[in-house]
Length: 354
Ligand SMILES: [Zn+2]
Image 1 (cartoon, rainbow, N blue to C red):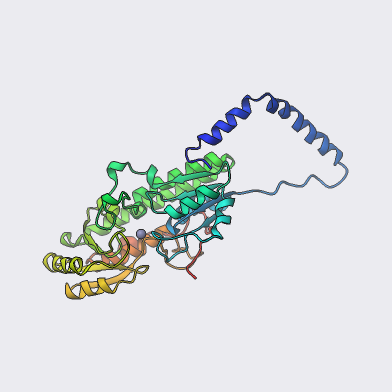
Image 2: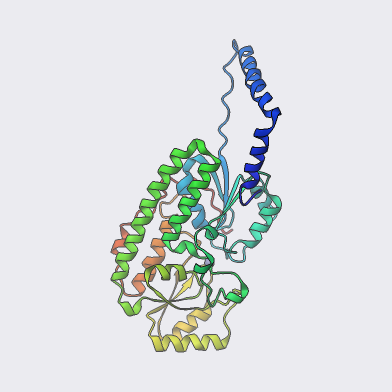
């Protein structure tokens, strides 16, 4: 496996310099031609079974973005089941098989999937490729460190995909990599990406329009799981805080008290929990801070079931923002017009929590 892809290119360069390959390039077609002639009076030669590029991804929103671009031209498996904590996900031994068969592994990167990457590096076949989306989307000067992802731990907040502009960059990175590995389907990858980017632009527009309807003082977020800083940076939200400490445990009583005081002082209209991380502590913080507690946000679990139009990255964004904007006193009329369905239909193998 190579991360820079130079390994494969070098290999090809070495082969093309070799005299042996030149000889074979003459002999092989000739041999095939003779073999084909010999088969003439029988059945036609068997059609070579179409072997699709085998692509493996990690969290469901990234699987969905890849599904939009690859459509039916690739075989696609998402390795991290929906609804589990992707930050602490450890692949099981049977996942080795999936990783070992992959031609391409696409991950978020920015240290989100460390155990999966470790297993991949040990087990992926030679010549396979790895694409780290987050690392190729922003520079380290744009990394956000915060309460749940403190700088002294060295891992930036990895939740880039909740900013649709970063999702657009993910889409073009994926398109280019699919074309590099499977140039035969270039046309399909380009057309799918163009259609998907249009949808992401419509989503981005709808978000901007909706935010205008939220009273300015309410454009502030206090969440349990710390997924929204790159979204906030894009759309002018203020992150008041996140509750979940960097080890994904519950916050200390001192921290809880500080958050309650802050909510009372700043009159936050709602605090947001996550379906993946049910939090009695956040409930307590909301109750004592005299604000609403809404436990419906999700950063890597998509609504509906695989095959449903809303079971998609865009569907997840629309659902999250509908919950969020309504709670903050905004209108969600613009979001309702966004079409969440994957541009080339549903093709990915998603895994769900058992
Ligand atoms: Zn997360």
